[in-house]
Length: 267
Image 1 (tube, helix red, strand yellow):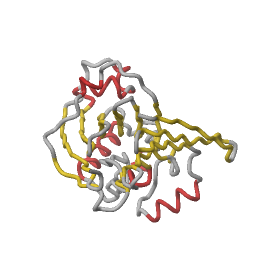
Image 2: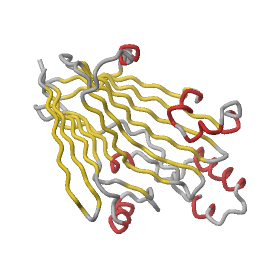
Image 3: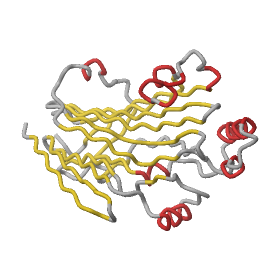
Image 4: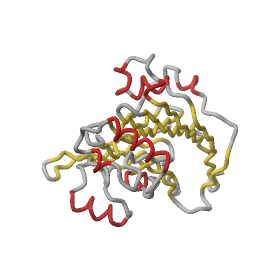
């Protein structure tokens, strides 16, 4: 299998932007990273999305894309991830916000945070499909990604991580989503992770895993939600609260959905 990597970079507004393309058989993996969106662009986007505010650090032009030579594929970008945020009042999330407000009664920021939208920017985004509807078919499946197989010591030929957005919730937590991919000689594996920590209230992680083996006419996509109140994590070292890779092991699984993304145009 011929695998080619290339990288180009440019200077934009004093920020070094980068775009990497990596070829894996008929697939091209593209990772583009650039500067945070300008305030006026964020305000315009917030109006279009009918949201009072958007994350402080919004990388609107960052993208990680996996595209077949036939045009179909999947990509991960910040704007589409925000479209999956509830921009109306959500009783569960607002209840958390009120609990947070009561615990921070002396804070000047709390009244600004508790608004009629999901101020945590929780998203169940799983990627944006590319190409025509007739090229890919998404169906539920019982087939699972073989995580043990992924633990095998196989050479990593390409790795990249792309941050889509991050917000510090008025210095009382963090809400962020990033996507990373690694390409091996026979497969690629992607993890899109939304991480939320509201100090004194809860920790939530939404993961989307994507896996494809060379030669197969489908990808496997697994989505999971894990969440816990901070009061139920007192047995966990507080240092883990800020490390998604550590805390995820201590969060109860609330939901899991497995799908097969089948390529209809590939024989």
